[in-house]
Length: 259
Figure 1 (cartoon, rainbow, N blue to C red):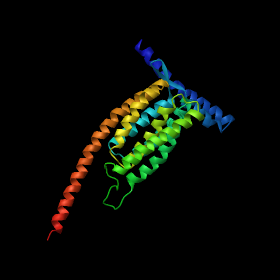
Figure 2: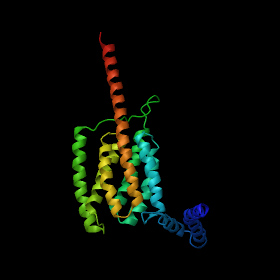
Figure 3: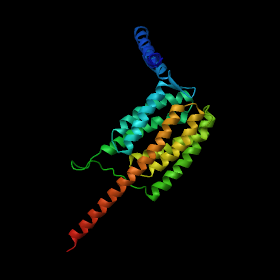
Figure 4: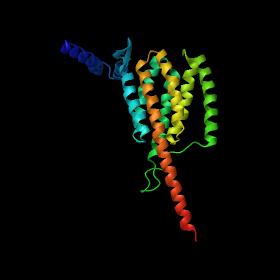
């Protein structure tokens, strides 16, 4: 019985891959341009089911790349950015299929900000300096600007989604878009408050994705929530360390300059 179940599970996992191979070979012989559409069809195939709901191949890809990206951010690994871009591409396909158009558009903007963040995290001032970007707190001006921009963009996006799309959840969809943009910008600048914004985004996103039947994505965002708490803790430690080092350096400089 166990062997039979194992063979059945293996067959279920391999079925989408075999189907993709057959489609690609057939498409390559008949219509070379159809390979792209065959890939899109493959990504929308069911990989497995959770609580009776189908989980697609693209949702699995989004799950893996998303979890890996957030984990890398908590530890300030610069390769979180290219992994994040791959995650953005996966979620464009996923969200368009689910009718979450604001989220799909958000992923394109995420990718652009990711390039910006990648540049900031790797930019060097000298051979001895690993990066010009250090963990810091948001200024009062940044906090006011960020809150205001989020409110305005949420309202505008909600109106647009309600009028121009078939979105059934325009307001929370718009808020996730706006707040996520703010958080990603803060992440690129290594502003520690971005973790609080991500926590709010996750709390709103989890029931949103459950309502759309995106169970694996909802589980992923639950994991994101835990990773954000861990990231906040780690960045606080880094901020205290950086602040203490900077303070010690300033004290040393004042002593050296004192006649």
